[in-house]
Length: 171
Image 1: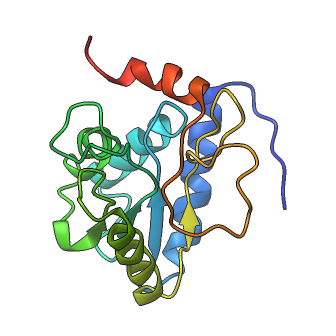
Image 2 (image 1 turned 180 degrees about the horizontal axis):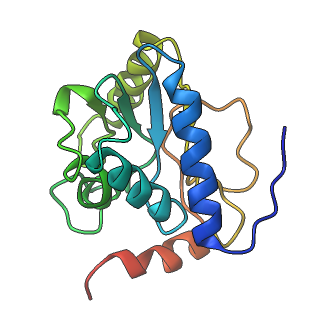
């Protein structure tokens, strides 16, 4: 593991974008797991810019949504998918066939978890996961004390995560 201490979010986003695109360039059909939220937004902006400038070709990338609020899906403003559509998928014209995203509004959340696991397996694993760190230390909505061996799952969110997450929704 390499630890980088960088001066600000912009520098961090540029470094992360460089590292991501370099790793992904060596892979034939890579799967990238993307999180919504404030942490990765600069990375997505940089990726969009690089693709639009024709410095980066992502036609062979597949995307997996990291998380979603139970009860919401991409049609709901404030949902994780809604944010990623705005910041990444729509600006890049990503085809729906290249995206797997948990439907938090599904009546069968266990099946959504299974669908996610099947997508990961179909792509021979996740090449890169872009994660955010929550105010209470959660990583990708995996609250503190979630076992590291946990796969796709539904979890009860901590009060802090729920309170901080309200910023993504219109009042």
